[in-house]
Image (cartoon, rainbow, N blue to C red):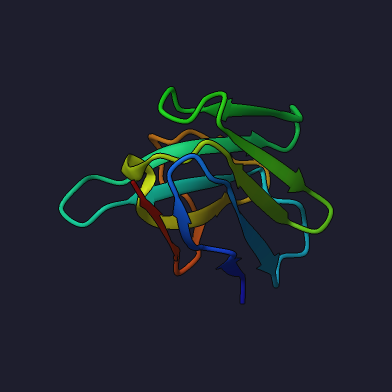
Length: 124
């Protein structure tokens, strides 16, 4: 059974940094991509960053570009998200997601696997 498990969330003051981690297990190949999303109650889920395994490059949402960095280890099916210069608006539950090997990736497409989420709270 494929599982994604997030860790590393917590509370920080505005301007601070946090790193959230995602560890995949139970998958015999490398995911086509791994991604980070976030969601605030009452709002739509927002795609933040995607790592394209075959292309070895990342995509970032404008809201986090220059502040967040996704760092994967495709061989281990892990993907960390380093978050710097955090703002109160970054407060959300952060989710890791992955697509099956060989599938296309986009924040507008469904992902095959999801973690349960980790809470990030930024106080102003």
